[in-house]
Image (tube, rainbow, N blue to C red; front, top):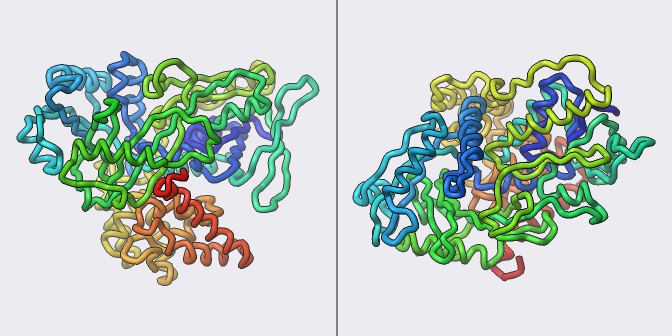
Length: 538
């Protein structure tokens, strides 16, 4: 098998690059050692934002790029990228007072060319208390209310990959790169890869190979450690609590009482999540997890801002931890630039690293531009290519989405196809966009697929079929962690749903009983790993 461009890494940048290249008419393959969005791209703060704090570091170009991309993503993925109000409470003794913050907010709105979801406004202390009753009033002077966006990072990655596939790209998930193929001159000409679960070893030839593996970038381009490290990895941890324990109407920007680091408390349906930490990390990327110190750090901040909530370790339902693949730099983890870099090694390998979720589309376009330039330089590409219109082409779930962004209209259409309750219709539309219609058609054809995956929750068995048949899910973890997110949202983290999902996947994929039991055990281990901080073993 031979391709123009082969991309190693199925995170947001790899998926975005595959989409961009395929839309230009290039023959593309994407190889991912686990599931799409397995790493950083499903473990972020789930925000599409300009990065207000980067104004303090005078990274105006980064903020402008980010707020511009925020607007693009709101247009091509309105079902996944949703406006969210952020309160930035100002207390006595704060580093920046209301006047200074107001200036910063006007700059922030201005850099977006005043196309933020809404222009900010300044609230007095009394108004803040009305908006967020649980927020501490001790020394409160007021708060700007500004707007960025929330997203489902795993689904944003998935839909980019699915759209790449629709434009001709081939996806090889659960396929680990074992090494590079090289031509007579020593230049990289493809990869040797091994499919998981005893699958065959394959050779994939390519004129250009892109390394988009995020935290694994150094180990891919530098397996023997002979080159200086490109990355500085920092760990970001989030914890999830029941909404009734911390009910919020808006995201709240918090400055930690110990080190003044900015973190957020964010409403998330029937849950609230808190994060993120930002500490240097030296271990294997796949081993990153929440520690007891991480959880204590986040809870200490909540005790300052929401003392009445009295949040404690027993309130934490789930955790996630991810790594930022930052370009090496001096200073604290929080001060390292979020800019990205594209590096071309002497053997022709192109590596892209750094950056942030919000700017993935622009990063993807830039790395594909570099690959196309290499193809032309080597004479492998002589014909003109069509324009990549990734900023205008809606992602799959946004095709046919109402121009006025009225999700309730789509929910009504969903309920006309199959008898599902309001909570399920809302969940399906917010998850799949207009593709929710395809999910409920499965229920209409087979009412058994309308069964709940977890008691009292809106997720349905049809989502398992859809994940396997239409969304390249191949493991129970794929379904419960990245297709439905029961791992984060269910009170038991999806443990009771795992046997149901495994049985259905066994039927669809022809698993043996042994493989089915292995899949359940693998998911149980993921849940146990997310809880190790309680024993101090993470």
